[in-house]
Length: 196
Image 1 (cartoon, rainbow, N blue to C red):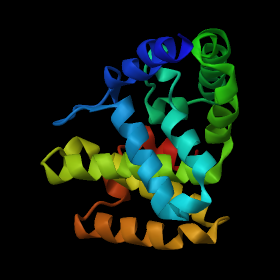
Image 2: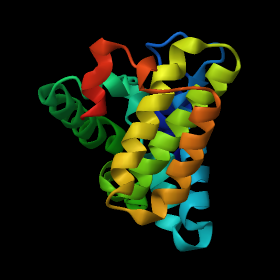
Image 3: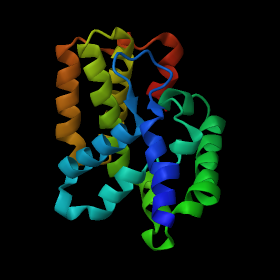
């Protein structure tokens, strides 16, 4: 049965793929957990009734990472060639591996493709990243402070073209300021991501 194959070979794998796998974390998070949090953020940003397709896209936005693993968001932006190669690998994985098991009537490639290109999903993904990192900071993991600032920076850039993000960015900026998280927390070697 294709549904069982898909669940076993792809969805279940996400429970075992560590998200943010290159950072020291006090409480590891799986890609499955991250996908769920991202879907809830999409609901809160736009309303669950208005975005059923976006909820599907959010839940499936990293489905290929059951095969590829997670690549650090900062590494993806180090060089445009790395970002392009990563996107190509993700697409090849979807087309040649994940879709082999997915029931065709699910139109999985459509929802996954939406997630790769939609601003709402991009913003929800960044908020999910910030939420995880701020929890780590609150638990005493100061190695995540720079990621909290970078997430805020990326959201400010998105907000410039998407006003609906204003309250989200303002709330995150307030939370970061409360914890005295500033640009000075970003190591000089990582400043490239502030312009990515």
